[in-house]
Image (cartoon, rainbow, N blue to C red):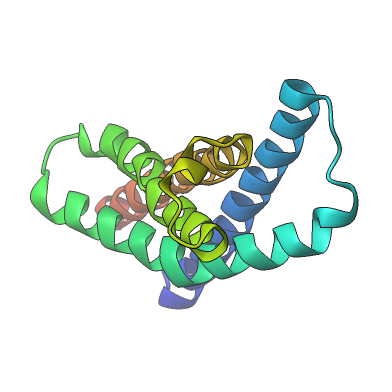
Length: 144
């Protein structure tokens, strides 16, 4: 697979992963709490995008790289989404600490649950997509 095509796949994967997380937040808010985003849309997009770009995207790539290098069985395709989904705690920590001023009880709020849904679903999608991309690249190279 050409390097340019691989980069395009990963950019699309980041966009799809972020969008999935955003929709997860939106629908958890609607079905879980009976509310809409309303006037918080700009703040939600800003803070989630900052957390995603600064914390989660590099962390996803690092975790997937470490799993790829350390696990040489097909179980790594299961570990990609699990490990990326578990990493949701880091951007949630980043957001909660930014707004709570060190109050640890803020981690038990409903907003925290919404961000956990956001970043966990994003991680599951990213890990699955990463596994599909790496598997297709390996398969493509075997056929040549």
